[in-house]
Amino acid sequence: MIARPPLAAEKLSMLVGGRSVASASGDRFESFDPFTGKAWALVPRAGIADVDAAVQAAIDAFRGEWRTMSASARGQIMTRFADLVAEEAENLAILETRDNGKLINEMRMQCKYIPQWFRFFGGLADKIEGRVIPIDKPGVFNYTRQEPLGVVAAITPWNSPLMLATWKLAPALAAGNTIVWKPSEFSSVSALFFGKLFEKAGFPKGVVNIITGFGNEIGDRLVTHPDVAKVAFTGGDATGRRVYQSAAGGLKKVTLELGGKSANIVFADAKMEAAIPGLVSGIFAATGQTCIAGSRALVQRSVYDQVTEKLVEFARTAKIGDPLDPETQVGPITTLPQREKVLDYIGIANGEGATQLLGGKVPEDKSIADGWFVEPTIFGNVKQSMRIAQEEVFGPVLSIIPFEDEDEAVAIANDSIYGLAAGLWTQDLGRAIRLPERLEAGSIWVNMYRATSYLSPFGGYKQSGFGRENGQTAIYEYLQEKSVWIDSGNSIPAPFVQR
Picture 1 (spheres, rainbow, N blue to C red):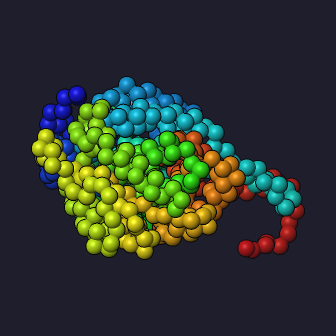
Picture 2 (picture 1 turned 180 degrees about the vertical axis):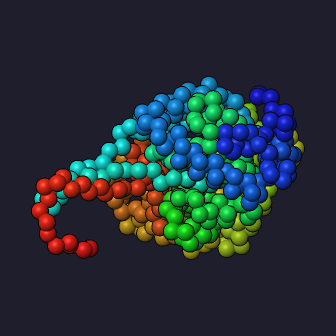
């Protein structure tokens, strides 16, 4: 068992202009440990003045040493940063688990994997190339440049703070931008410790700035600030719409990675020894607190009863407990309001006529009574029209929906405002090729679930957002193209051709 870290209040400062600073007002707010239900850290509470200071620091850095530094030098700094993160991975994982309640095994895996993003995009930094265009104007040399946007505002949620921030920071920095990062007010501690590594790695002051506070107090100012060129946001779709609307006023570039109601589809020919654990881990491993949670299990009717029985039996064995215990399989909900939301949805599902097959309440175990837990919950006889099948719960709640054939499976899976991910379990090679073409989602997993990589693009269809993170194409989300025309002195005079 890992010892719970002590109160971190004396260590926590924001990062602005390369300096560790308190908020301008001196105000702080409490961050809570979801397992104990008690405050364990005090975090600076930023205000408008802090946003302005952070953006100004980022502007100064963008116009200064960072802009004139060679792309290769930027990449080398990112590689040094990756090495520092690798050294601190265990400490960062413990902080994340303490602050957001996710399992230490998952946080370890994420924190050990994060350096790969900075190595990968650091390696891409000096491989951004323009083009020479064989222009149709005699005596004219025309070429293009890919240039950074400027200041990027990165806004991240509470469920995987460092990983989801890395998906934004790594490509943005490799492209030559500077950053103002606002982590969620519910899980800011690891971000502030992460921030200490940027200066140590050699980033010029102000290239990365981290401010902490409440979205309703500083979010709009950050998104609408005239010197912010782009907003990269991960979070709920309702907040995403507000971010998009606010950013539109300044014609800013936006990347949105929003919610999901992902279908995890099991056909009768699937290897059940893989599919059943795949369904369980797809929803319960992160306590359902992931945008790609496989919250809808679509099961072919001929094996519906069999799969349901095995699924409930397997999920019943999940160990609920301290997320810092490596043996724990289901941890707490990160925030108390979110736990209430999950419990409300369970009540709605029962009211709509779904059959509760497992869980559905707060655990009775007195050893975890102070934590914000909800039992792993499974509903059968779910109709696609029910709210539990349409709306994102973001908790350990699984809906099982039967289907007859491929056409019905696709119809049910696509009957959603979301389109972030989907899973498919089958031994039919033809089906494994056909169905991903028909499923309206940005990531499709066949005989696996919930895998991501710095090498592969990630993003949503429909109201799950737009833009792509990860993969080589992600760096172009943080670049803009310029066309340069040069008269070589031998051009043939001709009437101007206007566009």
